[in-house]
Every structure is written in C-alpha cells, then in structure tokens.
Length: 449
Image (cartoon, rainbow, N blue to C red; front, side):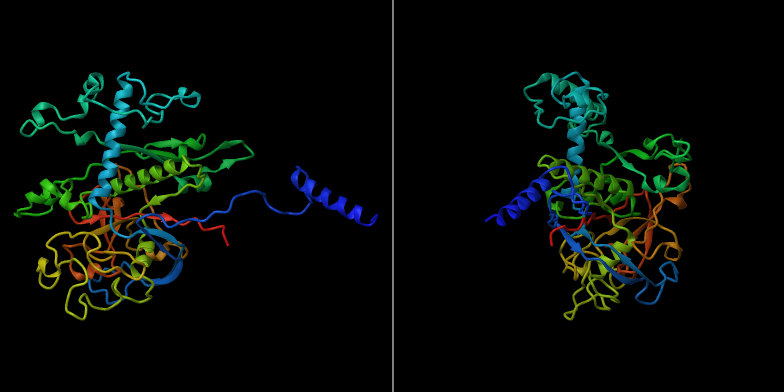
C-alpha cells in the first residue's frame, strides 16, 4: 500500500502540471488548437496538386511561339464548375446597389444604416461598416425615398419615362495588399535604422514613399455593371439588338455566362465574393480566411487538362466531335457555321459534358480571364513551382502593359483556340461579348488525419 501512494501522487502532479502554465521543457507546439477540415465550397470542384508539361500539345499552327513546353507544378485549389453566370453576377450588382443605397441614406442623416460601437465611432462615415439589418422601405418612409432619388437616372435620360437605377453610379470600392511590393528587398523594414525604405506605386500610378505598412495597401474603385452594348459594338453590320436589350437582365439568360465584363471587373467580383463568404463565416466564429481570385494561366491549363497529361482538348481526344459526329463544345466550327454545334452565340453553362475534374466549358462558350499578365516569353522566366507573371498596369502606361491572358476560346473562335495549351490575350480594360470568367479558391489543407 505504501508503494502505491507515491505513484498515485506522481500521476496527480503530472495532470496538474499539464493544466498550468509550466511546461515539460519539450517542444510540443501550441496546444489546444482546433482541428480543421475544409469542406468543398458550393459550386466548385477540387483540383488536386500535380505536375504537368505546359505548352503546345500539337503543332503551333499560328506560329505564335508563345507557349514553349516545360514541366511545372501547381498546388491544389478549388475552381468553379462553370463560368460565372448572369444570375450570379447579378447578385454582385444588387449587393453593390444596396450598399450604395445604405451609404446614401446614412449620409442623408437617416439613422440605423451604419454600425454603431466604440470601434467604429473613430472612423469617418465613408469608412464605417454598413448595418445590413436595418430595412430599406421607400414605400412607407418618405425620407428614405427622397434621399435615394439621386441613385436614379435624371428624367431627361429615361426611356419612355421609366424609372431606372443609374448604373454608372454602381461602383465597388475595395482594397488589397500588394504582397509583391511588400516583399521587394528595397521596401523591407530596416531594423537597424528602425524605419522603412523604398517606394511603391498605388493603383492610380502615383509614387508613394514607404513610411509604414499602409503603403502596400492598394485601393481601387471599379464600375461593375456589365457593358451590355458589346453585342452591338463587337460586330459590324450585324443585328444583335435583342441580345443587348435582354442578355444580362432577362430570366431566360440567367444560366448563360456573363459577358461584357473586363478584367478589372472580374477581379472586383472575386474580392466581393471573398468578403461575402468571410463575413458570413465570421458571424459563426470561423477564423479562416478564404480567398477567391482569378486563376493563373498555369492553374487554368492544369484544370482544363482534367488529369490527362498530353490531351489536346479538355475532353481528352484529338478531335472536336464525338463518335456520333456531334461537336463537343460551342465554337465556330467548319467554315463558320455557328449553329452546327448547337449554339449560335453563347449557350447555357454546363450544356456539354465535363472534363475529368468535373469542370464544364473549359473549351468554347466564352473565353476566360486569368490573373496572369501576358508576355510572349513568360514561359521562359517564370518559376516552375506555381508559376505566374502578374503586373498591375497603371492607367498611364502603354496598352502593351495592360494585356492579360485569355484561355479556352469562345463561341466565335475557331477550334485552335479551344486547345488547352493555346494562349491569347485582351486588354484589362476591355469588355467583349465573348469573354467571361470563373473563380478559383485557395486550398487551405486539412489538419484532420
């Protein structure tokens, strides 16, 4: 009995020591952290990490010499199953409309539309977060109705006297951190002098001396309503007025890919989507930050290949028809018979079969923006691990610096542009009737074994 008591006391002492602030002297890491398992996000497919040979899978018939073969490796990520649709982009437009309305009501002196609290009282009204719980009711509240009149078109600009929102006022303000400039050795914090050095440029192209970390916080304001006139401006002597009048807003086109969106607008959408999810998860205590963005052109090609190493098209075969003679994508087949593949212009997303990763329309329908800047020799100088070439072109820079990579080909392209390895480009401030986009989300990994 006397021998058992000391052992029992030692066990109790060990338990108590584990609950206190003292340690065993061993490296154990921070204890008490929760396990994390990341579920697949809604409407997205998991794209596993992998290495592949990027570049031409067939002859370079255009003699572009801009996609030389090399082996690269990319991390895992999530990608939208389809291009962003009109209905999904409309959610963005309506959120921006409602946020501007709430900010307008707050500036008019109407209470309840900005969050209250000690944390917000020190901020200007333009910086305070919105209170989405207060209801907007212009039918019963004359003060709200009068304050929101400025959001509508003036009377002399209305068609048939119809009261409409002035879409020119629908702008999305957002910020991001320029990690590339922050990592630049000239801009690092000098611990000996206890100050920052160097300089950077903001989104307007203005030079900013680096005095603190705020120099790396970039701000932008982007008009986000799609250019619905592209259905006319993209064509000469062609009747496309019905598409201009109905394509974005009519319910018949809800599941069609959004077009008329330039590269800057696509980036703004990704940032809004990031904020939307993280705000919702923050309400339930999720501490993880999920980041939506456009894919790099290398991520796009890896996803388009669908797990097949040397395939020419996303469906794996070397031809654009199946064994029944049906076309496998929406493009400009044969000698220009647009209707021969089942669609004259765009078609509903998901009309054709998905590739090996479960992704639809990675060839045809609409070409897709990537985050990557276009340079003919980019394959030569980018890294072989998660390669990418980004360049945030300033408004005053020449057009050649504003080129962004397009992938996948569209409903008005010949089959060469449908190949997974074909690179094309468009200018970042240009919107067309044949360019859309889809988002990717970074994969955080799982701590659950």
